[in-house]
Amino acid sequence: MEKIQMTTPLVEMDGDEMTRVLWGVIKEKLILPFVDLKTEYYDLGLLNRNATKDQITVDAARATQRLGVAVKCATITPNRQRMEEYPELTEMWKSPNGTIRAILDGTAFRVPIVLPMIRPVVKNWEAPITIARHAYGDMYKAVDMTTEEPGTATLTFKGESGAEKTLTVQTVDGPAVWQGQHNLEKSIRAFARSCFQYALAQKQDLWFSTKDTISKVYDGEFKRIFEEEYEASYKAEFEKAGITYFYTLIDDAVARVVRSRGGFIWALKNYDGDVMSDMVAAAFGSLAMMTSVLVSPDGTMEFEASHGTVTRHYYRYRNGEKTSTNPMATIFAWSGALKRRGELDGLPDLVGFGERLEAASLKTLEDGIMTKDLLPLVEPGFQVRGVDSWEFLDAIAARL
Ligand code: NAP
Ligand code: MG
Image (cartoon, rainbow, N blue to C red):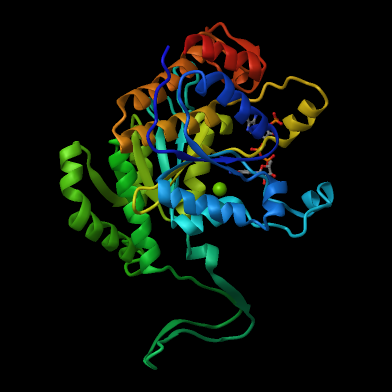
């Protein structure tokens, strides 16, 4: 077979531990035999981040801005324990995902991989529900305090111009607890744009929900900015693509989501997204089957698995064990990146390859061959067999 050609490279960010091991095997068995792969390679493994004083992470993010598509392997975010495990570390380097998200000004979308033999807990969910969580502000950048005596709290903004705005929060007759939250108009706008861009790329409806009946000004601002962006920049494209933008109160959204068949994107404020993404992930079955896409307001996309480096499996692998680590989310990160590259460059063969890679992976599971983490999730009546990661990847390659 002649290899499928690429015109523009994509950014490849290598990572750590078990996912780094699988990264190499996925490329060797599933991609390099079929695609004349062009990547700009950045080694985000912990030791190389240390050696470059984390410049490599910044370089990888900049390259992503330039090339428009990236695929990322899971990486270690060092903590105290890691500082002991890797004594050569000169600093407790920040989360690479945090650094990349800040540079790309992006929103992370969490997408479950669904298949017929693993039914979600919610039986009527037939297609994936993608959660888009706003990643800035609100409770996550709030200030809090407690007070002990009767009194009054006020909220004051002092402008650089000298102008001031003050509100009374509450007058209390005893001990109380307080919180001050904020968000930025430019961050909300970037969030809205990323959501509209991703909905267009996926050709899926976009839902957005807040509590604007109660939080009329704060949540009202989110609602207003989404509407403004939609009307000004996306309405025509949505109509052309046959998809809809739908705003509803979060209480109503929760009820509709549970009764839905799935197959849409649900955008949520920071806290709502934090809670709902874990709820939806748990209901769909497994962290190992959850992918993640970071989307910039300009449509730049970085694809990755939602899970971490699977440290416990890596330690067993280092002791010579062929582990049964699930590579599905990492494979789908690669297929997502190749499809996006193909779409941007007008390469239907590359898009087709990404689709075939996904189909071959799903077919392998449907044929009952899977990593052991999935065995307990399979519905009764299906014949299944647990294999190690290498056997699983060979089975996909055979179908591909
Ligand atoms: P994790 O790597 O997601 O693994 C937690 C556990 O979930 C595993 O021990 C395993 O359970 C199960 N699991 C996760 N992915 C799996 C897969 N593909 N196949 C089979 N089982 C899977 O989370 P963690 O142990 O909390 O974090 C490990 C490292 O990853 C940390 O250094 C953290 O900083 C990093 N991390 C990176 C990212 C990222 O780069 N995006 C995200 C999260 C965490 P069993 O051991 O019971 O089989
Ligand atoms: Mg959470």
